[in-house]
Length: 168
Image 1 (cartoon, rainbow, N blue to C red):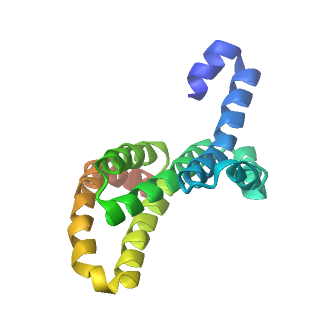
Image 2 (spheres, rainbow, N blue to C red):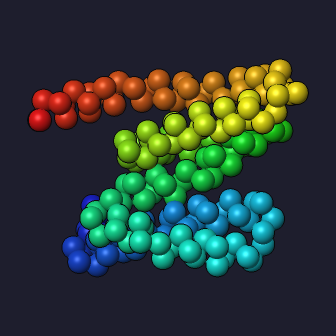
Image 3 (cartoon, one colour):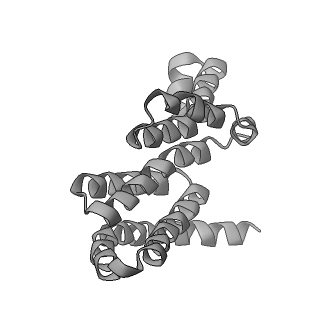
């Protein structure tokens, strides 16, 4: 993204545009989830709080653009996982596969957090829906493609881990 923006707009403006867009993505992700939760235009100021949070500005300032992109996709991924476990929603399943794949190729830090958060959502469903445990387990099988996506990315992450250990 940065390469394309720098080629199109020059180094200063290209980096500035990518940084600004990346910094807005966590708020956009929160906005999408709040709108899906039927909060209508209340979603705008609530998502705006994410936009002006110090963690977003700090991450952008230190060049954490991949993390911001990944964390922008994360709320929507978790919404989709919840929808799969509640309603067995095919659209959510496809969207979750695409989102997790995008997070995996964006940032190893965001990918780790995304995988942990998906596991947490599944465990939360198991813990809070005890009377429906068989249904939750049946629907959790619909999350197996997400496991496949993680397994397909594993060789890349193992190479990354090996390379980082060699450099230390």
